Length: 279
Picture 1: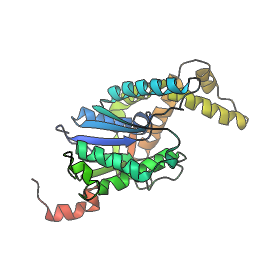
Picture 2 (picture 1 turned 45 degrees about the vertical axis):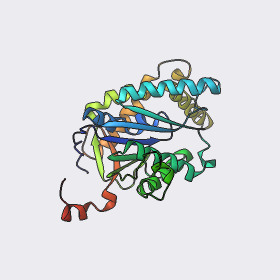
Picture 3 (picture 1 turned 45 degrees about the horizontal axis):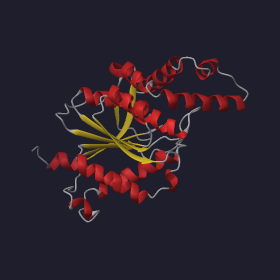
Picture 4 (picture 1 turned 180 degrees about the vertical axis):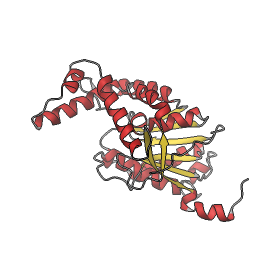
């Protein structure tokens, strides 16, 4: 059992969140984002892909536009202050240059100069079947280090983007293997649910995928059949969001929670505590 972290006042400081897809913030860490924004942190979210194929019955152009609009709605519900779109095609990041993607992230770090950098955990990929998540995790993890070196992308310096070191790294995933910190999200769980429900297009596509898998296995799920037939998504999403939050919470004697691996001061937090002093 891990004692839940207490969010310190943001005092206008920045959290830089880098995700692969529009629905990642709400589904993976919507509770923590709400805790940050409620505490006065400025959250900037970088979406790497445009989710152009994540729909069930729309054209590619309609899918891009609709998912972008729903992303903006969800971001507003979470209190996210700014969205940065990198515009990569979804589900083919495996073909993209990791070094090129890393440069984009370094540029955002040097632009926004965040206190904390947040992304998928590259070391907790057991059960992770989305290659976009894996590529983003690796690129962002390396960008944390490279953003501090002036010889990495000196062209940034020529436009006033100086090297920057993030104090904390927050990692999340489908299954965080080495959990260091837990956020109690019970007070904001209903708001997380409402943010997730903004992603109607992506969620309906997910419902369709799960129904196909069930059918292959000889199963039918009425709650999914109703949603796929144009019915309300809320009952299914409530089960998904509340069920996951309660399951995590039970591991830590909480009603609802989200788990993270947090690295502070490059892993030298003990050294800092022994020899450092507050500015």
